[in-house]
Length: 305
Image 1 (cartoon, one colour):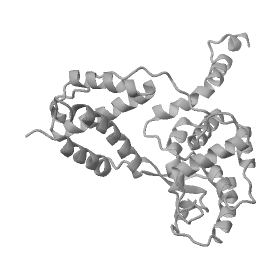
Image 2 (spheres, rainbow, N blue to C red):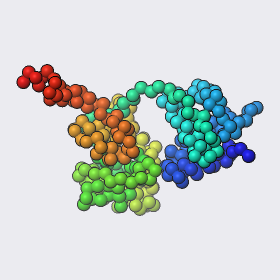
Image 3 (cartoon, one colour):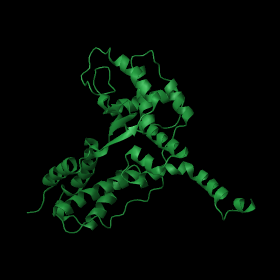
């Protein structure tokens, strides 16, 4: 008896949550891609079970669904999700041959992340009104994001017990619940202390160990952090399209520009592959070229000296 779409969805969900230990957001992203696949093959006049789908079938699916994708990047991400599903079916023995092997993703150009200058970061921080109840929290939040290069999910889930003040480190729980130790600067620690003084006077604290709380005493949502960042950028007169992730990009770029070792930056960002981290070297290419011209024994500058 062939695998049904209901069984495939249930099993794939459990695999992503339990075996891959992915976050709920990542699981939902994969299942969203799966739902497109299921809608295409699991309904209509001709129903094809998951394990019976061929490369030709998938090509027709991609051609159809691509019309609804707003960019090549979203199409590539969707195809990546479909590949993950069929890789899972192969692992489970529900299929022998992978129908996604020859499936091609659209070519993507290198999309460099938006980066804030140090002056722009200072402008955003200075735009925070410390007379408001949330002022010290927002200031501590941005200093922590920039000081540690955090993802927004890592920021909102940070706990009081994650801060190791004497050692100058914080414990960060990243993708797949993997933990890493990241240095935290004295400025960020000072702003956290200022915020904690205000936090103690909150009338209700429901999540005692969560660092950044909303006015109801619960952890901030990702959406709320996005809203705060956008409002502060507008107040600071910054026209760049920024998000909480922009502070992570800026953290990495400023470190690389300053001469930090790429492996150290990789460790702090929690990247599994250094290839992911290498995007931040784009800012430093001109510096590398000037260094080669100045110091390589075969360069004209060295030979003239």
